[in-house]
Length: 399
Ligand code: ADP
View (cartoon, helix red, strand yellow):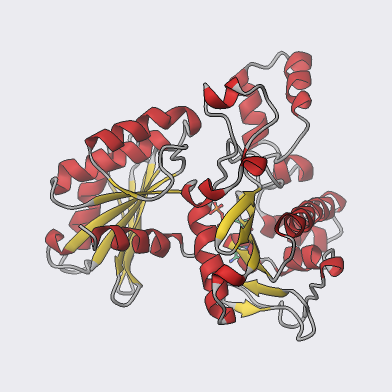
């Protein structure tokens, strides 16, 4: 079975074509600057790269380009579009309506569109991508939606509800949804596999640390709490997002500076986090480098992030009543040895002990705790596309 995985943003569309027999990526690529000038198409397949500048006025054109180059004689990996058995679409927020991945029909696509308020930047382009796929590929190719929020639907009320008047939950659906669910689920399962244990018997904390970061408590294979909230702004500080702050600060700044909601949103989502504190970069490679060269603000960023992550780990160990393993994943979690060290050095009380030598690893599955460590520390590269494709395969094989 070959599955096309689509991750559609407002002006970009990333894709992978995955062969489920080998669980390998046959081709991956990107349509960038959709609907703007200077459209760009890139694909990497069979060790061959193609990059071309071409206008991409809309998502349907993007899908046509993807299919054209997947079947291209020189750069392609399949001889005909009919070899694609199904398509998986990444959707950021499925609200309470979609507790799991689902086979799409017109009604469900409309429903996802109705959830736009919960993910105004992400759900509309995902819906556009779905409709574009159907219009280009026809109605017979199964289209499946996989939601970032689904894995967290198992959170109990104590973790998912906010202490606001009840009507804000019942009337507006305000609650903790979390994000990165596909990644947390994937690495938690990989962790159990690596340990040779049944995930039902494990208490795992998964740390997805990238530009956006979230921490999840996975108890017996289920998410019981996660650091992102109603939106992906909550939790630990991130590249440009502030993470948890006293909500009264928002009102205070808006009043002091006369900001409207859009301006305040930009401040919290785009100008805060590592960028806001360091004053020079949201990228932790720059932050790490500057810290090594004695930049105090950069060191403060590393200290703040590691302190916040360690605090979440401590609270989730309490929430689960124990802790077997901590997983580090995503750009930072997989590659930034300094951030991992700063976090782990704060975890002594939990019984987790980092092996500094083993920690010297980037982008590959590796246990980085000492032999005596009571809690396993493991780096596991995430693979959200494969996780999406696996969900699609499970659903399609039941049709
Ligand atoms: P996103 O949340 O946008 O998917 P990533 O998971 O790629 O982001 O994470 C981005 C962060 O990870 C950046 O701060 C960057 O410094 C770090 N990062 C990504 N790749 C590497 C790498 N190969 N080496 C060191 N740091 C990396």
